[in-house]
Each structure stands twice: as C-alpha cells, then as structure tokens.
Length: 373
Image (cartoon, rainbow, N blue to C red; front, side, top):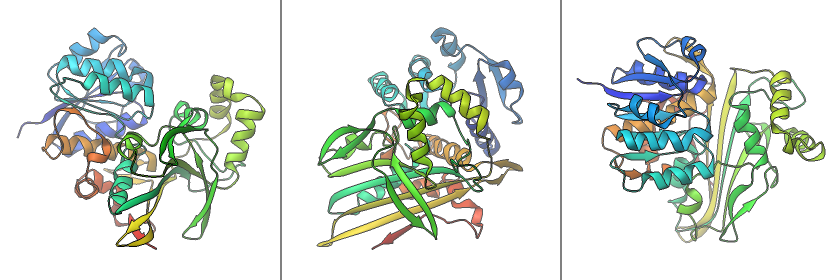
C-alpha cells in the first residue's frame, strides 16, 4: 500500500514526536524541514528524510512541499501565514498547532478557494479541548455556560511557582500576556489574561485556573449567540497566578517579554515528568431541567515506541496526527477551512493516534469521563 507523503515543518520537541508517530505507523513517509541543521541532526526518528531550509522563504518552501499530500506546521506562530500559503501553492493539505488568533485568521483567508483542507489549531488547546468541549455543549437543549480548563503541570513541583517548563516558553508568555477571547452575557468580547481566578479540586488535589489567551480557537465563533458564558482558562497549582501577576504587572515584565523568557529559561527547570489535565464544565437546560455536566481527562508522561515522551508532547502530537488520519481516510472534509469542533469526539478517541489520550491503560491515569451533576 502506498504511503502518504507528509512534510513536518519544525524539528523541535513536538515536531519530533509528530514525525515519530506518523513514520512509525507505516502509513506515512515523513520529511522534516527546519532552518536549523543542528536541530535536524539531533532528530532521533528512524527512516525520515530531513532538509535544512529557510522556511520563511515562500518560494523555497513551496518547492519543498511539491509532491506532498500534506504539510504539518510545528513551527513558531509567526511563520504560520507563509507555511499555509506554501501549502496552497503546492496543492497539499495544511495542518498546524498555532494558538495565535491573528495567524488563524490569515489561514482562514488563505483557505478560501483552496482545493485542499486547511485545519489550524490541531493541538491540545485549541484542538482536543475544542472537540471535547463542543461534544459536551451539544448535549444541552440550551447552553448557559461552557468553561474549558487545561493545564500542563509538573507531576513533582518543588519551586515557589509550582511549575516547570514543559513546552514553548514564547507560547507560555503569550498566554499570560495577550487579551483573551471570551463570550460574556452572550456577547463576544476580550477579557484580560490572569483574571477570572477559579479554585477547584479533582481527585483530592487543589488547583487554580485563570484566563489565558488562545485556547478557545474557533469555538467563540461557533457558539456565538448560543451560550451566555464561554471561557478558556489555564490550570495551575494554587499560588502560581499571583507570582506571575507580580512579575508581569507589578515588575513590568509584560513589556519585557524577551527578558522574561531569558529569566524563566535560566531559572525554571524543564521536566519530562508532567501531567496534562483537562477539566470542562457546562451548564444549561437538558431534559427540562437546569443541569451541569463535566468532562475530565488526565494524560501523564510515558513511554511510547520505546521512547519516553512528556504528557504535553503526547497530547499535542496525538491530536494533530489524529486530525491528519481522519482527513486522509475521508472522515473529515478534504477541502477548505476545517474547524476542530467539526471533529466527532467519538471518531477522535477511536482513532489510533487519538487513542493515545487513553494512557495505555495505566491504573494511575484517569481516562476521559463525563460526570452528570
């Protein structure tokens, strides 16, 4: 059986796992593109091809994508428009992991009149949380509120922040600094990051959650006029938000993001021992009663295909690989702009890559579950 030819742009932690999952499935032949020859040489994925390339050069990137069935962007958000345009010019499907709202708007414009599918925001949040949140929302006759909470947390926190770096520092800082899309009082609006503090407990552990940017994806448009309150919040251990507010607002690091990045990367250790926690709650009218329903899901770091991967790597890479699989087998529309919430949660979790959310059956993990109040 012939393999699908896929280019992965970006040889970092997430790009590496995407390449490993797809190549290891036997159904894909992967080419990894990155402007850093060092990053490519450090890529430990058997049987993939690599090419050092200035991916910001539209012409060179388009040439590199010709003959590919799809391109996956695991590159920084500011490269999103050029990679999407190259995909359109090379006539291949496009998928990305961006959380950036403006970049996604550019992808939607580029997708107009395209012969292939353009599916942005295919990671964890937005991405899987959009799929799970919309699945919950559809179970109500009328929806009052939908709150999506996601956190990539260290399993063994020891510092005052109760946090370790598990993914892109640039992305983390943007989450904490940029305005957040929300629906309040039925109207689409923007709310400040770090505001809207909530406290809750799951399985005997206390957490906090607060507004951060980028996680809603296209849900804000899909549910506009259908919900009174829609918010995306990041989950942390208690006390984290107050320290970040001190750094960003009181000490002015919100205007010194590069310096903050340097400080964080010098001072906060990276960990591969992490836990991705998803906790979604919805309230509204169902079967003639005002009800609340919740969905929770935990994914821990673990070994897959003989290699140890972090929880954030697993959830992010599994999401975009599942979306690609569903696109290639015809489950998803193969043309134009694709919203994550158009994917069925049942189809996602039944997929071989989406099934990685189920933790391989480990007793200490918590598979996704719905809880009716």
